[in-house]
Image (cartoon, rainbow, N blue to C red; front, top):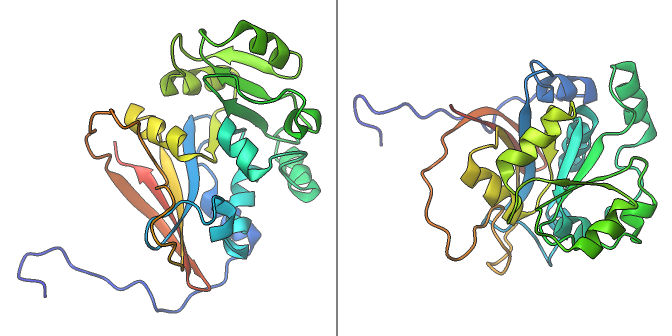
Length: 257
């Protein structure tokens, strides 16, 4: 029960919902100004807070979640993803379909977004399908201390960029990508990378899908920090929208600065 002066509580669901086609969703998700750098992450979580089911985030999603995910790829200049997620989720080949590529070209974008893999240890296999089947030369974002031999091997198939000396620094990730004209940055995971972006306060927006399922507590949160990390101040976010499809809620929050 709310007392006098309390913040009002409003009901947003169930209510009448208008179906949104891809054009309407693109308009909803598009940046107001592409020249203004924005780092937006996209994650899915179960109702009880797990970022994965049986080890994979894709197991929690559905058709609507996939549609929004694909449209965010269509809109971005660069996909930012941790090396562990690339391996676990089977990244290989084109990451946008032909129709999305044609839309990008018609709207003055490169046919395929750049792909930036974050890895402090240069762990990816340069002979993996991610590199051999990539339609664009990937970027590998690492730290200067990383092994010289692995750096040489990956430099054959990707542009290796130092974003810090001892560790990969989120602020330098953003600076390095923006310096290459990649202002609209779309982060796809994983939880350790998202935790680092939040801690550094460089995350501008989060699209979070809430899957209508219970995982049971064995999976990770969408964002994690090292065990010895100090607590951070809460990062206030502003709710932009909530979409609904078959019990799934698709939200977007923007950092309140």
